[in-house]
Amino acid sequence: MTTPALDRVDRRLLELLQEDAHLTNQALAEKVNLSPAPVLRRVRALEQAGLIRRYVALLDAGKLGLGLLAYVTVKLEKKGRMPIEQFRRAVQSWPEVTACHSTTGDMDYLLQVHVTDLEHFNRFIMNAVLKQAGVVDVKSSFALERVKDTTALPIPG
Image 1 (cartoon, rainbow, N blue to C red):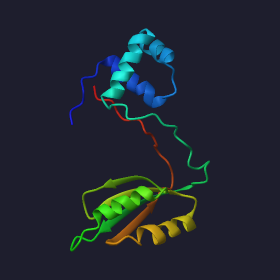
Image 2 (spheres, one colour):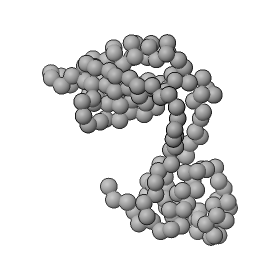
Image 3 (cartoon, rainbow, N blue to C red):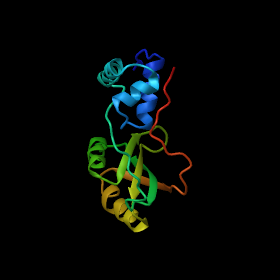
């Protein structure tokens, strides 16, 4: 996928919106030294180009009682009827999973899992993940400390 040509103003708008998507069009205009109308056109063009997928509120997992963050790798069997689609559908229904990536290497998927505590994690693994057809291995690692936690992407330029 090719990146659309972005000028300095487009890159700055993307940076500002990643920091605070709640900024008004007027505030954005002031920060990039343009009038509001062209800024609005630029933001809409960035949305239409798919560079801005959506706007969300980022919640504090700890304050919601989701104090345990785990990274779980899952390996599926490779012979017979492969359960990939079934597993992918199941992942979509698990609210504890906030991200799932297909990976290279020994394991097939990496899950980011937010749960209240170790008991919740145990129930999730035993009653959701290990009950899926074709799961042959699961490994877990727990986050001890958040060293960096951002949703902001680097803007090439």
